[in-house]
Amino acid sequence: MHKQIENVRQDVGPNSSSFVLDFDDSLVSSLGQRQPNLSRMRAEFRRVVKQVRNDLRQPRRIGVQIEWFARERDEKLLAVGIDHGLRDFRRVFSFASGTSFHQQIFPDATLSLGFSATAMHWLSRLPATLGDHVHVVGAHGAIRDAFAAQAAADWETILLHRARELVPGGQLVLANLCIDEAGRYSGGSGGHDTFGMFARHWRTLYEDGTITSHELHRATFVQYFRTIPEFRAPFDDPASAVSRAGLVLEHCSSVLTPVKHFTAGAQDAATYAREFIASIRAFSESTFLDALEAGRPQTEREAIVDRFYAAYEAEVAATPEDHRRDAVHCFMRVAKVV
Image 1: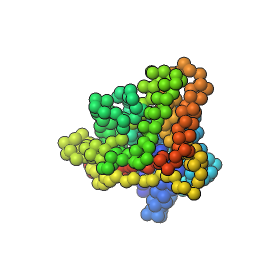
Image 2 (image 1 turned 90 degrees about the horizontal axis):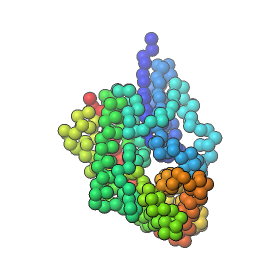
Image 3 (image 1 turned 45 degrees about the vertical axis):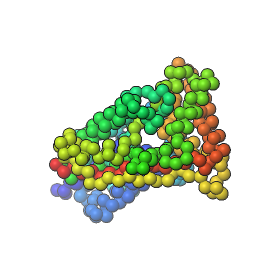
Image 4 (image 1 turned 120 degrees about the horizontal axis):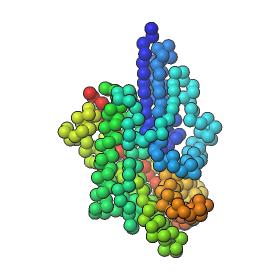
């Protein structure tokens, strides 16, 4: 009988479809080079894609994401679909699990490699609403503490689920949005703060009577950008549940990656503004749509949100050099040692 080799790869909460597909191609190719008899030995590399539940709630939002990623990369993404280059490999299987990374996805001791990028800042629940902002980066005192406590509990839960899923020697490779050592975060690394702009334009709709006070306060991102010490905390404490579960932090660093910057002469202000808004609308639209009363007709809710983004777009077009996007990530590599 041929020796059975099983490589199980999990991707929880993929944020960039084109990146995930390219990553899978490279990973499977690397496995094939290291194990030339991969097919003969009946190796099965099973890829799991788990979308954050928030992504699945808004089909319109998913359409915006697909359109954006296709334009950023090329139109092959739309034509080829989820299989992409994986169809070029034998004995490679892909499927999706509609659960959450806040839950266990695989049986115990079955996962070889866990991967997640730009996803785990989404919390399992909203601990509080914000009266004068839309994101916890603008909160202080007890409200911020409530978000921090929820994020710490969620982080421990996520890690303990992955610890149960991983085989001994298995690894997690994580790229999570963070607040870095300089206090920078995605949307707040220079120029106008994206979440501050969201809050101001959303409040304008309240002040002109378009939305109610309840809708104003309901627009709260279920997110928290952890600091580097907060990411490290479960690993730095040898008595923590995460450490006792056998997870060891092998690498931790913060990296800022430019995403959208205006360059005079490279494109006109109107085009830059349109693409800038498309990129931030992809992750934010559901928050504002969900904030509007369910009793409003869907067409009315969409028209309000369209107006909201149009006002922001006009401001970007007027001073494009003041609006930028950078991705600020905490890169981590975690190993299961027992």
